[in-house]
Length: 235
Length: 136
Image 1 (cartoon, rainbow over the protein chains, first blue to last red):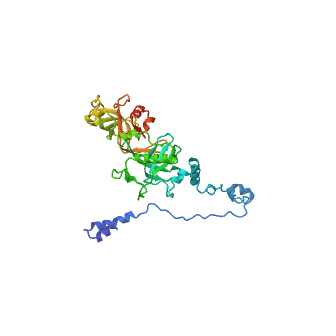
Image 2: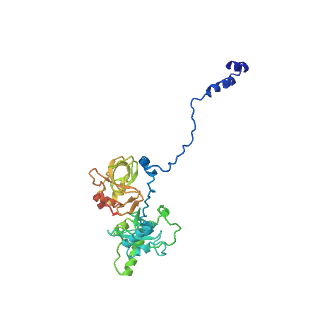
Image 3: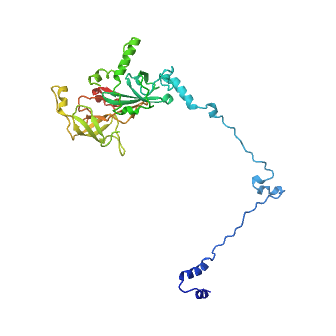
């Protein structure tokens, strides 16, 4: 047969000749798989005598009833008991940290007379060291509410982020409200030398003097070292 | 975050004005960073002018105790990176500043200008705290 094809094809076209010869050898099958199809399930013949029951799997024995499914009761829902646990805990903590609610009112964002960014705030601590400064930002986070105060102490810019409801904070007072409502919520631009308000010690001292005159006591809570020593350096 | 190559202000009257950090002591890591109260090794880069000491130092008017190029130990007293305190508050200053000390831990200068961080108290730098005009 190969002889005849060789005879018929022109001798120059070797490629087509090889193509016509090679496939014949390649198409021989070496492996045959026969598709069988699904094995059909046979039903159990009816009326199996009792002597053969022991050979059957348990679930097929005629005396076996339906499988019992145990359904457990839901445990009582925690969500139903307390819909907003975070709020509840915050309220509980606030009751502990701020029993009178005065400081919460001062730092209430809805309170028009409350502390806002841009105000000069004075904080005194239980240890007796006050810190005052311009409020750059107030983070309202429930009991974790904090206020970022900036001041220039001995001509060095100092910033302190104070937790408002911390038990170590004795008092928080607004020494001076911002003259103009700032058009930002956070006044980080006050860090730039161009906008820096500088030391607020004078304003705080004046506020303390005024408060002392009104209450009739001695001015308290002022920064001891900030007064005479800072003044000598012209802070 | 004071690390290798950080330039710091020197706020004592030892004679150094600007120093450069070359080593952070007792910290490990790829780039150990010092904060307030940490000990570092510095190189004096800029001296204070001699005239500044004249009227304040009265008759003593000592020459600068350190010179440019000196390698000294120092304690960080102010850092620009905010640092959390135990009560949750944060403190940060506008500059990085240090005080030169000798190897036994006593300050070289006799006076400090400017505020220092209160973290020095926890780290037992009481001699520096007593020299400082203020601490916050």
